Image (cartoon, rainbow, N blue to C red; front, side, top):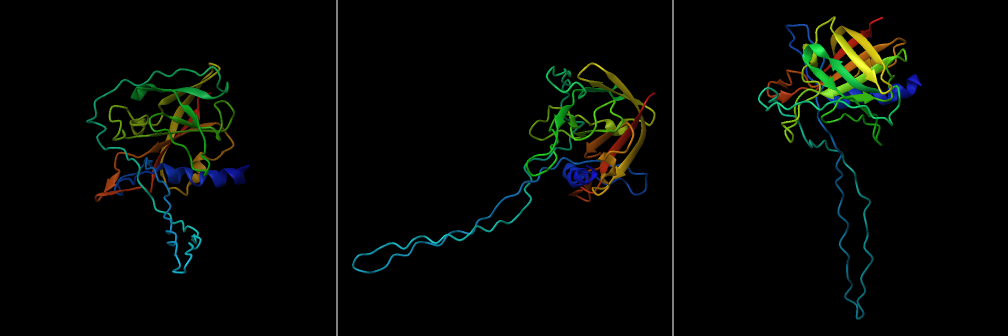
Length: 248
């Protein structure tokens, strides 16, 4: 099972994107919502050749097998105007009665005014992690609250340029202080309380933060932090990881 998770999670932190902290200060990791797609360039087929015989016939078209080349394509990127975009009321979370009874359906961080409904997400057909554009995602290959393992949720930090009025779900997670409380509610109405114990910068190869750890914990993965532009370039090398332990 751990070998399968290693295969899946290797791309999770890579797909999320992030930033590098200030080297003169203690950095915290973050994630950047960039979307990459693969485009195929196809070698054109040869043009049919006709003979000059009395009864001209057309030679069959010779088709050359297409050569696939990969090229990252930026489909959409979030804007950096989080402070300038007009505020919009956050959607009120509602439990899905048909969901898994243990699935987290509400997350509350009172100190930053966060009250959102996570949605269940996994991997697509290419084993690429699915990160909701405007919602908090609960990684459904991680644990459920109360199962005694690592519960992983992620979300974007900046608004998207095609929807500037929609708040980013994790816009203020970087402001959560050590010792503050995060509440999770499952579909069956159970409440689980966690206390923030650590915030770190993580590189894409540090997949241990979203793997099973042998004990209950809550891990928040923030895509993009507050320093996403470095010398005019988008920095993708680090992600913000917030870890919270259960309050007994």
